[in-house]
Image 1 (spheres, rainbow, N blue to C red):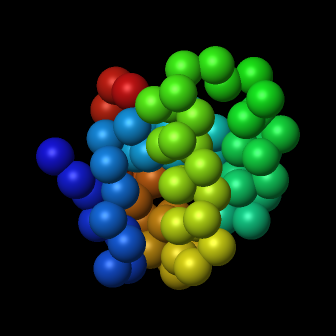
Image 2: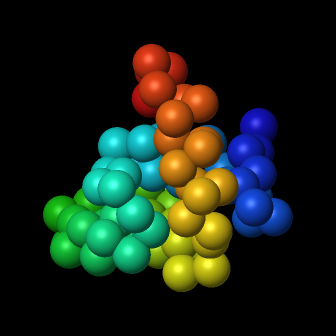
Image 3: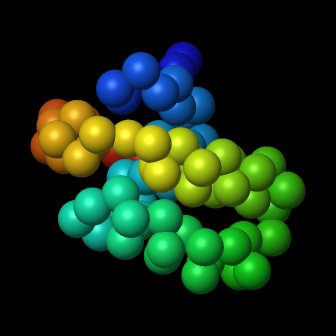
Amino acid sequence: MREEINGNLFTNAERRLLLLFYSGDATDTAEILCQALPDIHDCDERAAAAGLIVKLSDIDEAALADFISESEGNHV
C-alpha cells in the first residue's frame, strides 16, 4: 500500500518513519531524519529514510499537517 500526500507517493516504510519522526514541519523532520541516518542499520529502513528526506523537500506543509492529523492514533 502506498499513501499519497500532495502528489508524492509514500511507501509504508516511509509513512511509518514520517509518523515516528514528524516534528512539526517538513524541514525539521528531514533534518532529524538526516541526523538519525547513521543509527539506522537496516538497509531497507535506511533507504526508506533517505527517500523520505528527498520527498519532504517538495511537500506542501498544509497537506503534510493534514496527513499527520488524520493519522493520529494509527499504529506505526
